[in-house]
Length: 143
Image (cartoon, rainbow, N blue to C red; front, side, top):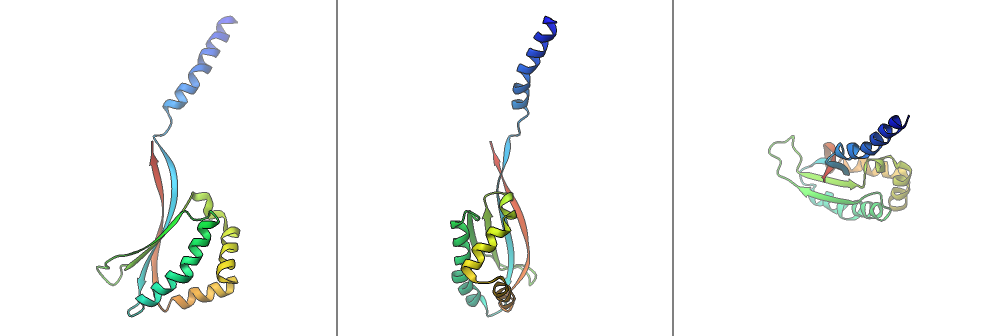
């Protein structure tokens, strides 16, 4: 009986060491939503004006609420008519943040008004740009 207890104790002592040895050399980091946009001819300044006022307010309010970590607007050279000339990124603290729809809606309505009005604005912006698609990417933090 003493031998079984000694073996069990030895195994229990080894388990944390084995678990530590199997720990991954990385962890999940923030999540970034990337949106690829094609601005319609002659509408670049109009779209930049929207991004500089309404979009900025939305992003800054979302950052203040802790829903967004960072956001950026990038220009790029489209090599053909099917490629974006503008890239928007929004970084969230983690994947779980994307499930906080109620909190996002509360921030959005406090900044932009009722959801129906926001939807109309979304449709109106289609006269300035076309969304070509997007990606959801997660940073990997190496240890």
